[in-house]
Length: 550
DNA sequence: CGGTGAATAACTAGTTATTCACCGGTGCCCTAGT
Image (cartoon, rainbow, N blue to C red; front, side):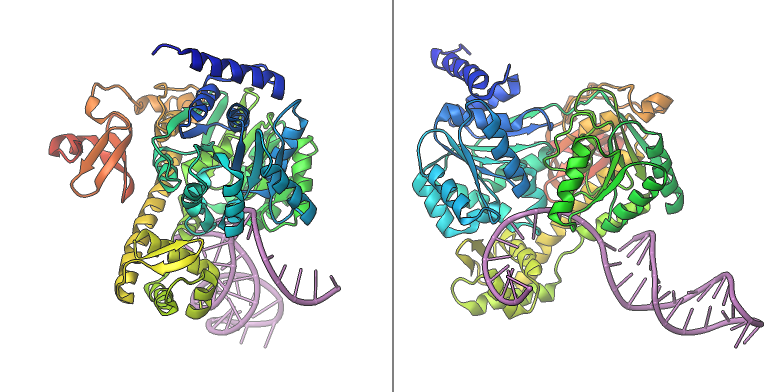
């Protein structure tokens, strides 16, 4: 395609704005494509490794589009970082955050900014968009670009933990349907599809960048007893140099491991979500300015960490998906210097993950909540339903999401109402089906985590295959390649079998529609919409014709 | 699902084995009381 004068003009404006308003030397090709698309009014889903500069995309796009950009950001601390970062730039658009921690004065200033003119940025948590008043004010101010930062939260948190993430799509439409940018560092294609669907994006430009991190050496250590594993974790970290992270499964373990490491003479700090805000800030600060050798943390330590010289990331047990694992592990070596990434693994450790993934409400509970909705006549608030059905607010959230997914009720800002009047038994039945599907998919994601830990092939190839990227046959920088074991079972991407190359849509007589994720010599991994990941034997597939390209 | 710790049992007097209930991650928000 020819570069139109208009297109080259936009390109020029992007370069100039980057240099003069933000003080950046250059714009990455991936960033530029995203900004150009947004400038033209197209939705963008950008999956880019941390450190690639996702924030720059919406910041520059705001300057080019010249209006109000709304940024949904999951943590108040992150919002504060963004506002501060923009304040430090030479001539960046003004930015402010609307959240519960801003006092009346700051709130008024934030709204004054939003209701002004010119390029400007307003950050808020998804919960804020649950308020009718906030939506009306934003609509009146005229939203010109809608950004969802850390967009994987839509998929990972929306269903039970922070339900407002699932209602962002409706909020976007109510705000006049400006272009939408969804940004995340981690999303394999099924998660990309869910983000796009839940946010009601229209034919988004999908950009995936920077997954292959050649400087990370990948290793997995398998253990049989938990005592032996603990010793190995401690011994391993004692040998590391530089600052690093140890991820553990529970809050209690953060303290236990931190103490053991301190006894070995390391400056170790525990970190988890139940700690006070001030204690958390202190750990962050110690980590950043090199006063810590290692931070021992649950998954709470993560988003917003911006330290380039993390030399190692060790996991004492696996998280609940490879997305989560690679995001956590990927915090190592962002300066492109060599860094070590190690997973300590016992298959029993996946039990805790299964426990978290299997919390679906029982049918009786679902029926009870549904009866409360029926009884409420008209719309009901979740809080009222929780009281009427005598369940926790969290359970109500989970039930209502299932009933919504099953098409029985509609849940929006105004409340909950019945859209398909059925008996409580039928409602419970349909919700159970939705819950089972969700659990199957979660379970299959855990199984992919197991697959990575137990693979006999190259670890990097496994990871990149999971994220749908091409990988070298052998990376030379993982424990499998180093030991030579990988040669026994090489991952092969071009066996001449074009029918099942990655991203091919397929149908399986039993599992239904799916997409090929990766292929190896003897097996094919497929993500099925209603079943999750399945690894199929290539031989069975070929001989019995189980899988057909659509 | 697995780890943990308290309570109980077993068998003989303070230690060891078994059973069983319980717990486990991620953060917005708002409101009441210091």
